[in-house]
Amino acid sequence: MCRWLAYVGRPILLDRLLFKPENSLIDQSMHARRAISVTNGDGFGVGWYGERPEPGLYRDILPAWNDDNLKSLAEQIRSPLFCAHVRASTGTAISRVNCHPFRFGRWLFMHNGQIGGYDRIARDLHFAIAPEYYAARIGTTDSETLFCLLLSFGLDRDPEIAFAKTVGLVEKTMKAAGIEAPLRITAAAANGEAIYALRYASDGLPPSLYYGSAKGIRLTDGSDLTEAGMDSLLVLSEPLDTELPHWAKVPSGSILFAGPGAVEEHPFTPAPPAA
Figure 1 (cartoon, rainbow, N blue to C red):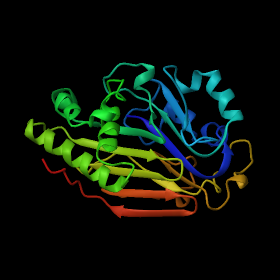
Figure 2: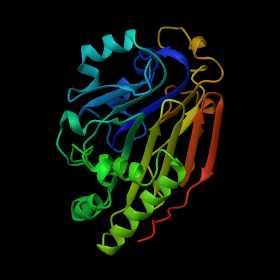
Figure 3: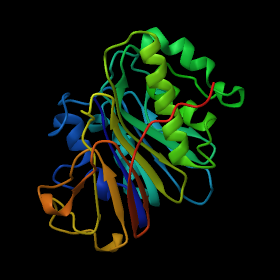
Figure 4: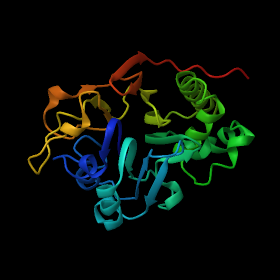
């Protein structure tokens, strides 16, 4: 499985969160503490919002710990909202187009988990993607298919409904195909203003997901994230330090809204779209 984080708040340099904390995302790419797969070296990606509505994107197949370009960019890019992901492939090819985050228009999307039996239902799920989004699917992952389905079911209009319809359709398709393996999701979609994150699994055992303020994070160089401000928020696969009271665990079967200084948590129920 993969590890990811999403930040929203005052603009900060990316390296302050990607490299500096004691359990930074780059550290998690080598030895994650709360994942089945300890190493996440099958590529990485970072997407950030700057001067334009559409986000910037940098992805590569190198392990995140071994890419000097990533470190150099992270030292220079300052953003009020960014997403970063380190990948552990669940079977699809290690290629740049399969690395997260995925981008369409103003949206970024990243995912940790798996659609059980995806190879048996991929064709059916692809038919459910709206024509205007189908060409955006250039990789082979179940994650990118989820993103295209979210867009098809109105991610721009109502992210919570889009997530409910997407997960509902996937579970309905899995059931029709007789697939017993679970659907497991922790995913984030961002639009430059807010982050929408889901933690869900059909067997009640989703990957880990937490949220908390970036301000109180302990950095290895002895500094802190004062520049982040109290209104900063992180949604992430696992805590960036050992100060566990600083982090809130997202309950299984929940969807989260995170904006500057605001976080809302709601129960999540899949709702397959009408035929």
